[in-house]
Length: 141
Figure 1 (cartoon, rainbow, N blue to C red):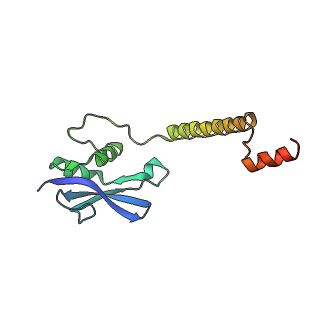
Figure 2 (cartoon, rainbow, N blue to C red):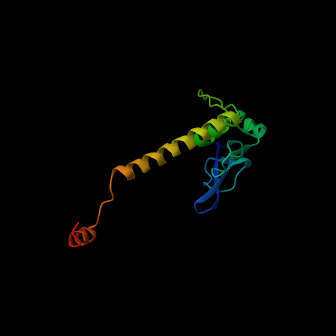
Figure 3 (cartoon, one colour):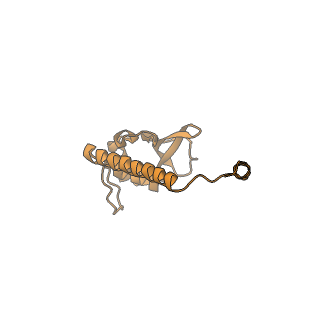
């Protein structure tokens, strides 16, 4: 039996979350899992809360030959589980300082974008519709 570690979709429309499970490779996407190893919630803001994995069980399944999907492989690497045969190293969850630096950079980018929109509004006058142009012409403008 070929075992795969893959995601099982749960939740409602447009608000999905996923369980990370060990499946027989022939099982359908949301079918019965052999074992649930953790979960992934893409809607959580903090990086620490997005991924929760039972590392011990994940390492066991990888040691007996379970093959993770590409998405699960990335999640496993982010949580610190070593995936056999994977050469890329992904940095673990960001430190609080790095998160704060990212937030600050994002806020700065948004502030610059807003300033640019204000400058653009000042430089370019509003385009008038045909009806507004006719009304201005009648008024003598």
